[in-house]
Structures are given as structure tokens and as C-alpha cells.
Image (tube, rainbow, N blue to C red; front, top):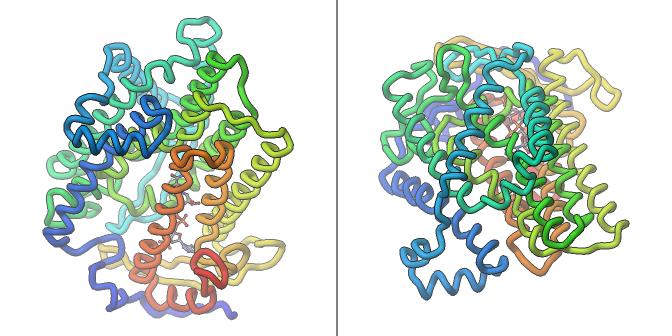
Length: 455
Ligand code: NDP
């Protein structure tokens, strides 16, 4: 394969007529708008369903589903939806305020993200690691002084799940109104022609309060990511209270989630170049998702294990942990290779060798031309989305800790696999529209999307 340097402009692929410009969608149809509404109505109910299944039906999907059928949808949710207690509302509001304060005041380096489709260049203050450390220290102090026992989250889980859902929906409406009334960057807005699709996929790309306070990074990287391990720890405390011990199968997902979270914050500047920040607009998916979906689905294993401890030989838990770490190494090193290439402008070695690259050019909405690099070496020479493969392997290992008797603790693995396969296809379409002939050349050189000779 040879490196290509050419000055041909990237042209949108004519087959991609749904993409009028990379990162911008043409008007969506009325049925597609109604699907968006259906999705937004279903997701919160699904989260409540999973809560009810875990805590009222001993994680049995069959029993929960048959009860739903016999009560009917309204009857089921009226009977089983947990009440948002005053304590849970105060606790959840306190969490949001605490994270907002940490995000606003803690020091962090300033990082410039890649240009947006509208041609804007945004600067972020990256202080996620500091906020995670302060959050953990505060939790330990509260637990040790018995001001707030570690099991508090698990003890008030029902109320917190409802509060998180309500907040996620309010954040979605706020993002939609802000996009209409006080947008941060008019050129980085997207209107689909459907109210429901705008609510689901968002109007603004990077909504901000003032010029610096980034709502999307706060929502994903603080409200969501900072909650993950805390919730796990709380369910481990619950397991200890119920059974007098914490199983190795509980420790493995907590350790894996901790690695993922700490690494996410250590590499927060890398995160600013991902699809979440650079391409996905702030709608229901990124407003409600990190608030309500992440806490419920990403911790499904530890929630399950809190009431259903699974005992495995230590060597078995250690083996699952080792495979999870291997998946993580693939995830991290592939993400790092791509990041390194672009940050160093091709002044780097990948697996000890000068990388093979395709130099691409693309245009932004202001008609200016930018150049970019597509990596064809290392992990990126084997498949086109190696970072997704590592992530899926990682999530598989967190499911393995809960055994095979119930499907519920596999929710995270099922979700990640579905999300990342769908995302790979979505990203391919966008890259084809953005990089045009250069992406075509990359696909010719690296044939497989996720698994060589399979897909
Ligand atoms: P990527 O970090 O893979 O970003 C995709 C972008 O990278 C493309 O749009 C293109 O952007 C660029 N690109 C693609 N191929 C190449 C190449 N060969 N060389 C150089 N650049 C390339 O995807 P995501 O942002 O979706 O994910 C980032 C990580 O986050 C992944 O590891 C994923 O597994 C993880 N993730 C985790 C989630 C979770 O909830 N746990 C959810 C979603 C993602 P450009 O326009 O710049 O060319």
C-alpha cells in the first residue's frame, strides 16, 4: 500500500443522499420523526422495566414480562414505578450541583478540539481526572465518617433512577430550547424538519453556557462517567451487608470499570476528538443517555451481583479480568495510535515503524479546506474500527462475571455490541461523505470493518 498525497477535494458520495454535508443531515421524513418519538418514550420505560426486573422480580425477564402483559402497560408502570423520595431528589440534585461546581472550579489544561463542521474551533478546560479524584475522596470521607454510608446509592436506587430519568428529560428539553433561542454557534446547529427528531438527535453540536462552560462534556464526562464506579461500589457495599462478603466476581467488573473511567479522564483531551464531542448533537441521546441510561445499564452486573452473588474460582475471575484488560489495551492503544498520528502530524512510529497514511482533504461549511490523515498501520491496518472491537471484548468480560443463568447482567454487553456495530456503519457513511475518495482508498486498503474475514 502506498501513501497518497493529492490535492483533490473530498466530494460527498452521491450514494449518500441523506447526508447533504458531512455532519449535517437532510430533512427527515414524518415516519422517521415518529420513530424518534417512539424511541424517546420507550427508553425511560425500558430503564424502569429493568429496574423493576432486577429489584422486584429477582432479575427474571420472563416473569417481569408476563406481569407486564397481564397488568397492561399503564397498570404495570403505575404499580411498579418507584416513588421519587425527598431524600433521593435532594441527593440527586446535590450530585448535579457538586459535579457542576467541580467542573467550574477545578484546574485543568486547556485543549483545542478539531474544527467543527461549521468551522468553529472550541477550547476546553480538561479537569475530569481532578473531578474524579475529588469525587472519590469525598465519597470515602462521607462513608468513613458514616455521614453517608457507601450503600446509600443502592439503598435509594429506585428514587434515584426516577430522579435521573426526570433530569435527563428536562436536560433534553433545555437543550432543544437553547438551540432555538440562544444558540452558542448558529453554524453548528442542525434542523431536521421534525420536532421529534430534533429532540432526539439535538440541534446544537456543542451547546455552552457563556463561551467556556460546555454542557455536553459536563453531562457525559461528569454527571455520567463520575457516577459509574460510585454506583458499583455502592452495590458492592450492599452485597457485603447482605452476605457478609464481597465476591471476586463483584470486584472484577468494579476493577475493569475503574480502569475504564480513570483512563477516560487521563486521556480526556483524546475524548475531545471523538464522535460524541465532534459529531453528535446534544439531544435526548446525549442529555438523557448519560444521566439515566448509563447509570442503569453500565452497572447491570454489579446490581445483579448485589443480590445474586456468583462464586467462581479465583483463577477464573483472574482469567476474566486478564481478558478484560487485554480488550482494554486494544481499545486504548488503537485510540492512541490514531490520536498520536494526528497530534504529531505523522511524526511518530506505530508498532516501531513509520506509519502508512492517506492524506485527506475535506471542506467545512464556511467553504474552507482542511487536511487530515487516515491511518492504515497498526490496529487500523487490520480493521477499520479496532477500538470498537476492544470495547466489545471488554464489555463481554464484565458480563461473564455474572454467569449465564440470567440475561439481565448482560445488558451492558448487548448494548455495547449493538451501539458499536451501528456506530461503525454510521461512521462509515459520515467518513465517506467527509473524506470522499480518500475514504474510498482507505476501504480498499483495509477491507474489514470489525472482524477480519467475517465483517
Ligand atoms: P473513533 O474514535 O473511532 O472516531 C471515529 C472517527 O475517527 C472517524 O469519524 C474519523 O473522524 C476518524 N477516523 C476513522 N478512521 C480513521 C483512520 N483510519 N485514521 C484516522 N482517523 C480515522 O470513534 P468514537 O468516537 O465512536 O469512539 C471513541 C472510543 O469511545 C471508541 O473506542 C469507542 O469504543 C468508545 N465508545 C464508548 C462508549 C461507551 O459508552 N462506553 C460509547 C461510544 C464510544 P474524522 O472526521 O476526524 O476523520
